[in-house]
Structure formats: structure tokens, C-alpha cells
Length: 487
Image 1 (cartoon, rainbow, N blue to C red):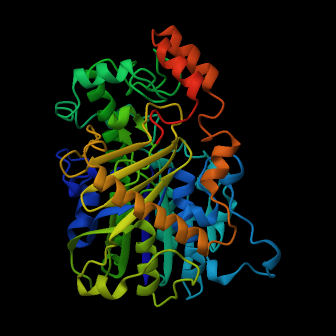
Image 2: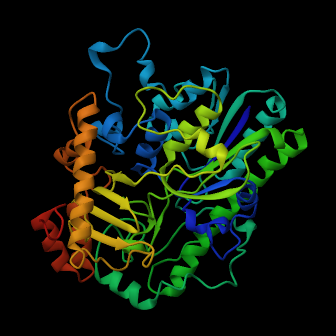
Image 3: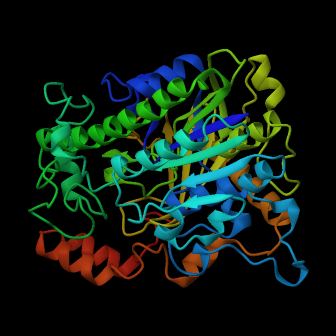
């Protein structure tokens, strides 16, 4: 079997045509979805970048791997300790290692390991090609290397090729020569001048008044980006730039797919299209970044086209890692005993959903949050806000309110209590079967909070006072990262 895995960083599901987006951002991905299984409610267990890929490739929740942050002790996996043998414990084999064990030639074309000093990422790969710019690459610096590899090796059997493109990630750097296919199309209707004005009176990294982080940059080195976020017109320019990044990556994904046709192996090659996380684009007053454990950052596109399996929509709640476990089963490989993910190859080939009753998703690099996705609800518990205006509990009806505008926690206390019970039970179960006995999110809080905001308080409160929001500065100096209304 051949498996091509196209991994496009920061690509939210609802900005692809096959997930209902009205703009034609993803014609090549859409064609794969038309022939494959599109998972509609697929979530990463741990966001953003480093924790997400750690969970996927290591096969376990961040509460078990220890990788939940982008810096500090919890940016590295927990060591096995005294029980470590000459080789690491096979119960916790990586996804590539499990494929390699059944004869797959495993290859990655990605700068991910160097970007995050995540050298564990290479475990199980036969070939590692670092494209060298630590995620600053655009697709035309990544895909041609994969095309060359396919030209030399594609007709051989039993390979897994991981190709990692970064174009939807800020800064929005798609070459201007690519144009803007969406210049004459309206921006998202839900975003209004009134919402942006409200956001500008609030606060937080990557909020409407600090769209590029904690500070006000009135000029951008990247011509696709607006200078500031003042109106829905600015937002349209911003979202155009994001969508163009998806479009550019999709164009190069199309060239990879065309190479499979050229080699005559398209019908015999499985294709997985995924991302490490989505991207808040105004939701919760976060623009162009991935700070939250919600249905925007944590929900990802996941499309699996497998030879002999017919196309369909699967709307079950799943973790992205469940798809990795299913692929192992489809390859007649064992899912490692210590994994947290559930394979469902039998259901997959039978055309049936094998979704879970609920999911627990986490974030600890920009805020410390754990959330529960159940039925039509998302409940978010915030333990450290990451300098944002978050209450301790938020509840959203994600079917009626997909952009998370209305926190109904005060009106739905019965739902909150039920979902808190789910979260408490999950935490107890995870701690009971873990190897360390420490919750890494607590470690992050004890170290001073999420990596990206732990040293920014003074710089940011100075910024707030300089922009007429001194009352927010006072609140942050008094409360730090504690949520607005602690229980």
C-alpha cells in the first residue's frame, strides 16, 4: 500500500469547499473529498502546533506524553525513566514506527522538528527531509521536493510520504503573483463593524487592537495583510489573505495528486489530508492565531481516501489520532498497546461511523484550557487566560452559534454540570493510566503560565494604557492569568 499524507498547517475545516465554504479555496482537496471519507467532526486532542503533532505521532493525549506547551518543561516528552530498556517501550511506538514495523518505507518532507526542536518527531521515519526554514517556507519550497521523491520512488510499493505545507499560517506570505481569487467576493457575513468595535474595546494577544500579537504594528512587511483591524473591510482583506494561503497550498497539493496520475498509481494510493489545528479568525476576539481549546482551533479537516472504500461523510466525533489508528489497522499493523486512540477499520470499510460520545480537547501554549465537545455543545474551562478576557466557564451551542458569539453558561447550568462531570471523569481516568502521575497543564501554570504570554504582562499592560484601556491593564495586573469569574 502507498499512503500520501498532505499535512497543511493552520487550515481550518470550514474554509474548505468540501466542508461547505462558499469560496473556491480548495478545488483539489475537494476532489479528494468527493472520492473519499470526509470526517466532519474531527478534532485534535491537544492544540496548537507542537502538542497537536505530538499527540498524533506519539499516539497519546498530551496529559500522557507531557507535550502541551511551546516552551518550558512541557514542550518535551516525559522520559520513560528507570524502566527504559535498550529500545523505547514498544507499547508507545510512534505512528511511523508502527507503519515501519510492517514494511512501510516512512518518509517526511517537513521542517517541523527543527521549528520546535521536536527531535522525537523523527522516530520511525526512514527518511527525513528538512526543508530548512522552520515553517517559514511556502508551498513551492516544499512540494517540489516531494514531487522529486515521488518521481524516483512513487512506483515502488509500501510507502508512507508525509508532506507538510505551511501557507495558511501567519504571516500571510503567498507571492503576490498568485493574485487574489477572492478579491471580488464578499467577506464572511457574521463579522461586522460593530463586532470589531466591541473587540477593540476588549483586550488580548491577537485581538482586534493587537492583531499581530501584543503590540500595534501600523505597517506590515507582508502586503496582503491590512495595517490594522478597524472595520469589516479590514477583516475582508485579512480573511482574503488567509484563504489565498489555503488556495496556494491546494494548488501545490493538486500537483502532488497529478504526479500520482502521471505515475499511474493514483487508484492504488491512499490519500490523507489533514492539519495540525484550525485558526481563530475573529472568534473569541482572536484574529489569525490558535489560542484556544474550541471548535475553531481544535477542529481540523480530515479526509481519507482509501482504495476500495466508497465516498461518504462521517459526522461522528473523533480525534485525529483515531484516524491514524485506523490507518494502522488497514495496513494490517498493530495499534500500539499504550495508545489512547481507537482504530475502527472494520467500521470504516463497512461505511459506518465509529464516533465517540464526547471528546476532551486541551490547549496550554496560549491559554490553559480544557474543553468538552458533546452533542451540540462545547464547554470550555479556562485555568489561565493567557492575558485574554475569558471567564472560567463558557458554553456554546455550536450548531446555532458556530462562531462562538454567545456564552450561555449562566442559562444552561444543567448542561455545564453534565459536561463538567465528563471532564472530571476523563481527568481521573487519564491520571490513573498515566506513567508520571503529574498533570502537565498544572506544570505549565506552576511555571508561570502558557509559554507565549508568561513574560508579556508588563509589555502588554503598557500597551493597554497607551491605547485608553487602562482599566484592563489594572485588571490584568491584579488577576494575572486568572479567569474573570472564578467558581
